Length: 373
Image (tube, rainbow, N blue to C red; front, side):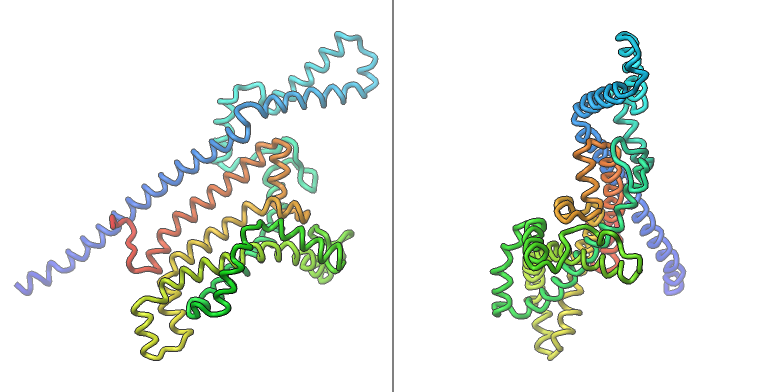
């Protein structure tokens, strides 16, 4: 019987391993299909909303007619034409421009073409916007604005994220202390958006004290020396980054503090305290580690949230980032830029959600990929 058990053991292990691979493979496939369908629906709805059901087409046609008529009326050749020739000349020009923009096709047909191009990351050309170099390529417009947004939101949100977690961990062990009550008292201040604090910071430090610039990315004209250029950018970064941090600081600390407080009252934490473990070990091994899935989720969503930019805050500070670019695109009814920003964010979100499922299984032994529990 012993020899039979020894012969069967490898077979059992191989069957178990095969079953795990099948389960993970099936889960991965279903998850990918589900996320892709979600992305398709979200992007198509964005296309329909951005076009306002065809209302934007009418606006664009009116703008084309007005622009071409104005350009034609300023030419000497047009003035020498008779009325009928003028009208035909303008109509032909309008027809060519409408065809170039695809406005001669039904909205349904164009919406599916926009959808296919978006899903294949064929971002195309902007309708009304241009990059700093004068290009209408959507990819170049976005890539030009991406570094500024990553600099502003990346620095501010990373400081806010890690700073709030560090402070919240400390407060979770000091429930009811003066600092704990102070954070609770100040948490409603986060109800105001970043641009609200930004206006006050501009009034105080730029208009009144005159020690900070009103806005922009760098001084005009930009310094030629690299070190001076970097210092100028950092100086312009202080106020918008401070506005973003101040707006979310106290509420974020309060949320993390409440979350850590739940885990800091567990029995195993009390046991660790009774054993005489130092506070830093208790925080790292008994409070921080069980909360890693939630921390990783928030950090991942923070990173992809950088892509959306801070629309109003960037506009207030004249910061040349993606948020301000999207704001201009909405005002100019530039659908390709709006759809491009949305599709890239949708892909980033879908990929992040997909990878998070596997990260949970790595950091938390209780999570099993593809398990029904």
